[in-house]
Length: 308
Image 1 (tube, rainbow, N blue to C red):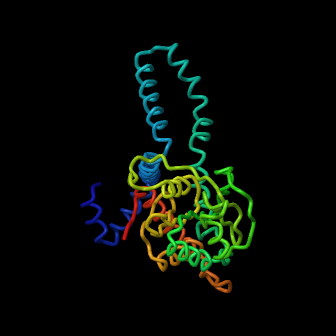
Image 2: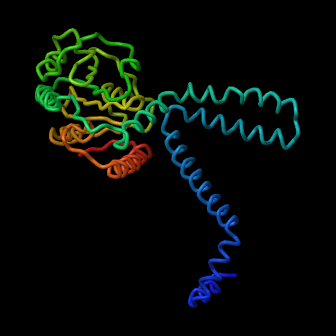
Image 3: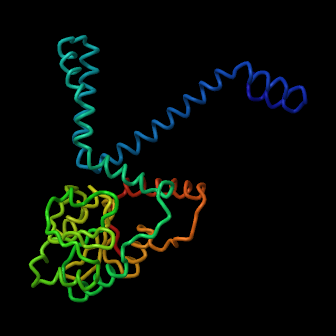
């Protein structure tokens, strides 16, 4: 029974019964076909985005090496070289552990982002004083004082850096301004902001190893990109040479932004403008989660610099 026959049959009342009977008779085949289509489509999407994401990470050479090993294993199996195949089988036993170790930063960032989706997040105000960060950035920019401020979210930044001096002071514009003054002993390095506290100062952040970034970028901007690649932090940078303001998130650098753009971005990312009494239905939060996942994939595929 082809598609034309089905259309002709459905034009008559008895035809509907025939079609329904045909569907019931072939229910198992239809289910198996639909199941195969869904599984193949899901795997294709997952592998596509996974390879595009890993291609921009530091673990991409490892992925290439692993694919070469798989190709070598297939060739050895086809040639029935049993000794070499046995050795490769032993090597592949450690693959799972090796993947967890090598891609630990990427996996942790992915899990942190998923856990921070609106579907699972609570409707609470962020304790971060956005105005204090914006005011300090404005002062430092007008004075052309170089600075880098990392706003911690879910991933513990200090565990990534293992550097810096413990401050644990209230988050104020005056405190940030004084830390980055050239006369201050803590001005060289970055600060870590956790909630409404300045936790650490004079921190050394990891530099990005990407080769597609602008070669004119200085150490501060490369450190901001590197930290945002390994954690979910938002990093605010002020250029010492020009006083330009930039911010970095998810490995993407947004250069030469205005104060309003910075404030709007912080309010949006940290959910600081959500009112406590505001309750959102589960379905709305699920839709926002799907939208955030799509945005996250888009940013991972194109983590580029944005200038105005």
